[in-house]
Length: 118
Length: 208
Image 1 (cartoon, rainbow over the protein chains, first blue to last red):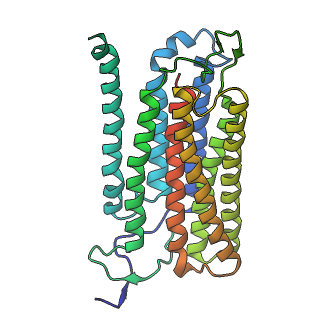
Image 2 (spheres, rainbow over the protein chains, first blue to last red):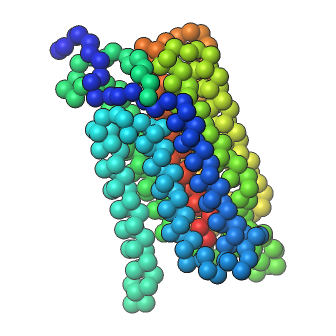
Image 3 (cartoon, chains in turn red, cyan):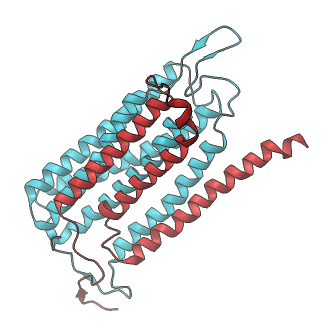
């Protein structure tokens, strides 16, 4: 068993504090957009725009969430700089997880739409 | 980009530190864990036969009136603080890697404070919901909501405890740059808890 030590050749320098703050600001703005979108579509500030926004509400929220998720994973979890193995170890189960969620929702929708009616 | 000190580790076939591979593998398994809980919430969404409901008011057959359960402003504040805590913990890690003890202790303390606020917010929220008539077995919404957010809250509490032990180490001068991987592993776990909430917040609280 090797007993000598080595430094990690696959890891790279992490971003600067300035970049961390910029990403933090973008995350804050995206969260404000999410809540703002909710307020003008379904909240107390819902007005004449609400009927137009309703069909786009869920896709827009999912898009904003995906953007926030990607920013945290890439910059704060350092997947952008670190070894691609870590990206694989994280993204592969993430794809399976997304598949499980979608599959169960489709199965449940099918059950309620057809199976129960006989 | 700034160069920083990486802790030396035993030689591995991948050239990567086993501990870091281990925490990423654990995070991968956690993705599957939360996928089951989110699926459980989504397939039961809107299927409750009795209230109280998340977004609509409800009157029971006995005439008891229940207001919508969710309070978006409070959860938004908790969400913002959890996002900020992710920023604070990377700044603490940066401080640890550069040997800047003052930055390490300060930013890590801020991270822990945000985590404690978030956990406290959830305890307040759960207590408030129970007082408003939503118990764990009241309806499908209550069961799936408490299971999903409860498990997430437990992860937050574990993260706060983990980070607190490292903060004590930092205060005692036992977290030098060579040991910064200890904080990096906790930070990766903390970011994962944050990204899970990034999904839970719109799916549970905002999408009707």
